[in-house]
Image (cartoon, rainbow, N blue to C red):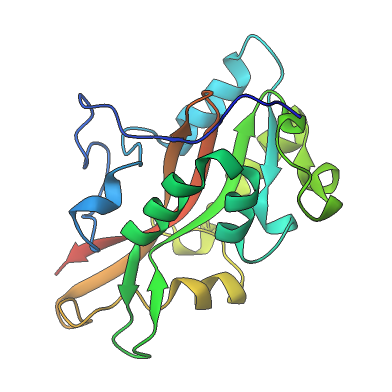
Length: 200
């Protein structure tokens, strides 16, 4: 395992917080602090194919359904940034009055999965080789929703909540779960599911 500190990298100043985003960020100006809205799924696939070295994936849901907790364990020296990103994405669900998250970590793209801690002694099980990673990326998109949506299980959908707040109700528009991206300081890519808001 590498001893080099790895943490989340803030969005570069020259990248607008809404670049490439089809909708709007619903849950505060800070939600995009670490996100790379200028990246799309096809860009990640192209990045994997064009890389000078084979890239791997760490499928976070294979380690636990509580992927924020997994991310904290994988980035022990970046715990403050992970918790800040999680806090930026927090919102109160209007239907349950529970505080939940508008972002859900899914996948890390990296040239070396072994540089990360072996969470639950399951890191090898969660690691995808290059071929598996290229097959996995398109599966993240929910084809049934056509141009909107990420393929999530029931637990993940519950963890993300309804996507509605006191200020944004179904009568105002709709919240849609889309892929989002962030970058680590070592250049690795974090893929997330996250809400975007579309006004009527």
